[in-house]
Image (cartoon, rainbow, N blue to C red):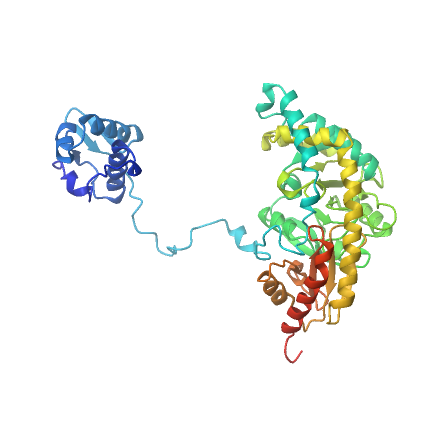
Length: 491
């Protein structure tokens, strides 16, 4: 067995004696551990006795003993009758195997297919799509709902709770959806999720196998692409026109889907509405092919013209539709509460696996949300926000008409929190969006939503939910300057 090494030399520098450096015992423990992991203390080598090391380092013997005991508890050293020796460990400093890049850790192959979207923009950046009017949220009313939830809840609510969500919130959502969206469901069919993205991922995990086909809208929501790629699905983009998702007979023959994702009440990002003829045809064909439709009803609470368009889920009884909703637009994004409504027959088949996959949580927030809905605060808040967003949408349209001095067409505007402005291909929408970020503006490039971009998929998606109407004129003037600067030469 090797002789005890000169630990005083191995520790490289004296132990610090000021408070900022931490307790002596911790300093000694960390230095010894690092010497073992680095290979400077070889496996099998014997450490000096605690008295000898304490004298060499001019520290308390108790400090050395405690450090040795901590190392032994972690498995770095092993005491025996002859003293304390370093354990045989696999060295983390061994060279990597050939073919492994030192700077690129091995990850699942599916991650290579998940492409980055738009650069991160601060939540308060102007014209950012998908953000509601945060300064208009009734924070005092929400605080009271949270206080009531915490004050009246029993200590048991500190536990995990029902994996599918708080029963009170599930019941409140079911009642609200029946009245506001025409959704046919009972509380037991509602599953609470951390926003719409987790709900989409749950659909993929519950209903698809690797290699099966998923249809997505093109252009369409980027989050569903990430969910399907993470589920190893084969994605087929289906074009969207003014009547919404345009699935042809040839699509059904060549690429029969397992899952179909659609935003029928307000297509994202184009703004079209899926016509009733296409809705019924989609349901009929999905039944015939054994497919499931994921209906993402992300912001249709904010209809600006005419009566609200009902959910596709409630059109016919027992439709093969999984309905997804979120409170990110109607409340605020950081709440991280969404929901999934499963067909009754499907719920019976997946409830047991769901209860194993989920753990519940955010229980006080869920109870506060139930209170917010039941007390009428939610309905009143939606009414105020509909009026605000209608005014902002009209103001943005007017500013675009007056100040966007490049050829353009405006899509959408009948619902939600954004407008889509289509530009001729000679204007580089990604360059405009990137330059806009430098000016604290966050429009999204329309082409970034497409899997197979066409010349018409060029433009900007402009959010007006969290931007004051009085700012639209100067902001659009700035966008107009950026668009002219991004015009491709020779186009």
